Image (cartoon, rainbow, N blue to C red; front, side):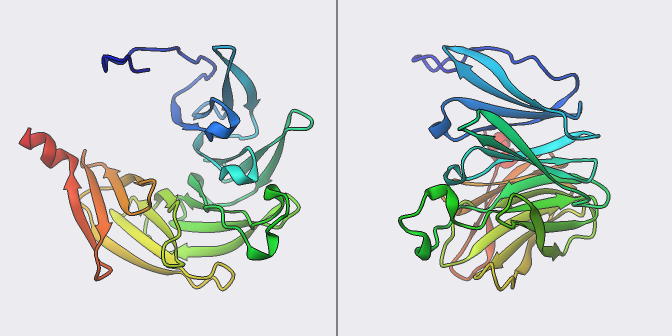
Length: 270
């Protein structure tokens, strides 16, 4: 938390994992203060603030190896969490508000040698669905990255099961992170991927049903890349890796990705 003076202070500690915690992710505020965490201990824990105190409301032990990445769905779909694991599978945890229970579906053997990252496609409303219940329309999709050097797009069949929709093949080593841009600009879906091969790919598609994805690299970096993250407006991409730097990238009018800032350079300048 941050005091009015600007000073930060520890609010609470959440104890429940038995190993390193790899990632935490906030749920949409529509669902109040809710947080998910994943760990090397093979578990995913969902926490919620109730009457001013943080409590564990659900624990998933569906995986046989480390859970490396978690991602909440767009809030229009409800409270759904995707989880990527070293055991090669992806689990989808869906909250049923009527019963107060969590349902689990798994994508088995999503990546042959393990899953490192997962990210949701932004919500898109189909014009034919206007007036229907908001959770009943729009095809759910996620993108995952794995040790097989591939990024894969998965689609919900509509009955809770998932099928492979498309494979993004460009990396020559482990795909460490994937990030689906939260904003669809000029009718284009955009996915960024980064990997052990020191590359960032930008993948684009104008029609998800046609599956015509086109990928390009923005630059080869000096070291393996670990994480990528889009700004909320989807215009700036942050990249971090083994070189201890965070770089920010923006696309110019010529459709070229230009480095606009380097956190390490700014630190030296200070």
